[in-house]
Length: 104
Image 1 (tube, helix red, strand yellow):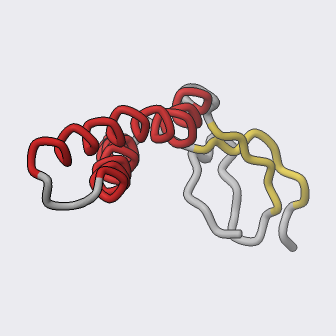
Image 2 (cartoon, rainbow, N blue to C red):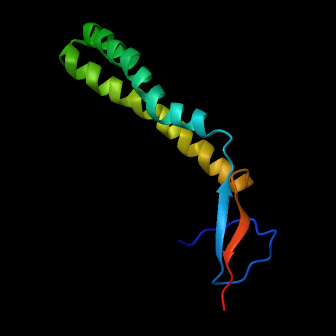
């Protein structure tokens, strides 16, 4: 595997190393990625049903599914933007914490 990591041990190409990544935000990201989209789908579905009653263009279920999927995707779009911002600021980084085997 090839990855960029902070190297305080001054390793060389070919060294086998142990790396660690920061744990902060992992639970929050998991919640945003898995649970929040499901929670957003429910009010999105009911909003679609309300739109259907007002417009009468499609069935209630069709509007509910369409708006539910839109609401379902919003947390993912927010995570995508936040992840790009974190990468740009380099607030997420892996660190080399040990050398397992030096290259010859």
